Length: 254
Image 1 (tube, rainbow, N blue to C red):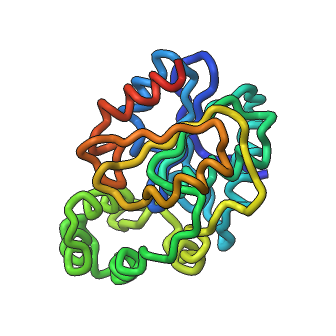
Image 2 (image 1 turned 60 degrees about the horizontal axis):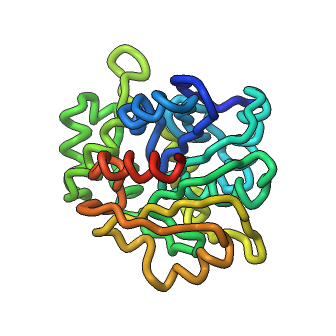
């Protein structure tokens, strides 16, 4: 069994945080420290991301299996799950599959519906990088800027660039697998699945990932749910408005 990499902070009821596509646990460090004042926080790198293992295979069945193995390894009970985007899809699928392990869930800016693949330009940008030629952070950034105009997305992706060995840069994520399996990321939650536990959906005010049309579908899968809008924030709502994000989560969990 391969175990997911994580950082564990604080003590109390387990709160497991799952990043989104191209993300990693480090993206949640600041909020994790705050949540750790009241919970045992697990900042987790999912497969093919961060410091966790790389594989050719990548889909939600595998991601929830990875999470189940992690929970079993640490013997965690009565867990709270918080997931952003792709991580939110994992959280939803895990909760409907293993409801007996889960107390509450928080889903950040994603709904149970199917999303068409829409990361092609990001994948094109990342695949344009040749670390033999782009052998400094500045050269990598200049190459990515040709494709990516949004400063926030650019800086988010650059956090994944690291020195794999002396003089050799690399990406922390498994770009080959993510490119090959990109269509898996938008998969819908299976029909006729539901979770009765308390559920919070957080939606970015300037994001179109959760719309009013999604409310009936959310209610079918998660009968005991509420949807809250995070002001002045887009898809990366936890980074764009961390204060409201933190307060909404704490309010829900208390």
